[in-house]
Length: 215
Ligand SMILES: Nc1nc2c(ncn2[C@@H]2O[C@H](COP(=O)(O)OP(=O)(O)OP(=O)(O)O)[C@@H](O)[C@H]2O)c(=O)[nH]1
Ligand SMILES: [Mg+2]
Image (tube, rainbow, N blue to C red; front, top):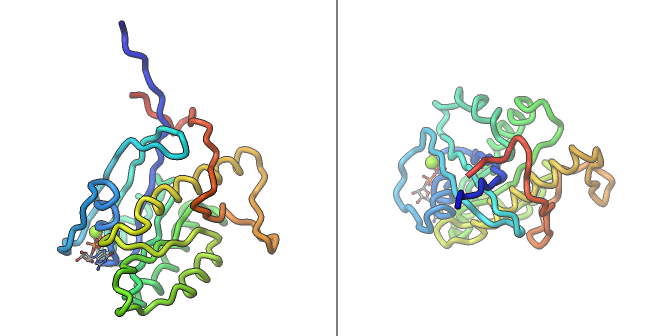
């Protein structure tokens, strides 16, 4: 009997943030379930896996990017193809928090949008005694960006799956808004790209569009 082709939605996520904040550690923890203790600066690495998110089977395609300043010229190219971004900083590094604004502005400029699916990830929350960025500062920035916020630890595997899956939910919500033309509104009436609620169920309609892949 011939095997039936299976259409799966593919989500293209990109992980951005300064050098050494833990983008690779989070991504490797998510895909391979282990913590990389050493630091080997990334140029660009890509990962794919099949996941079940809110009853939808989908392919997650994640691009782990370079935080180091010398690779800045590559940013616009990878931003173009992305459907959503994990903006990562380290709670132990104030500069990494302060520099996220440049990533945020470049994303909106490259995408030519006022908002875009994103999630703000405050990594290394296991290093509480080295904290330089308060949880409130993180939350305030996420509110300004109209995106979700999580404190995470690649080392302790805290909020790792939640960050990647949360971003997929933001993408689903954003795409639904684009289709219906009805944006989500924050309590203050402000238009948001989709506030993150880990318990919220996204649109669970299986994808069937240009983003689907055939297996
Ligand atoms: N304690 C602790 N260390 C972490 C955590 N995440 C990453 N690290 C460490 O921080 C260092 C840098 O992590 P990477 O994941 O390589 O950082 P990166 O953001 O990918 O850096 P670039 O590739 O240069 O942009 C490594 O030594 C990691 O082991 C974490 O959650 N907790
Ligand atoms: Mg890296």
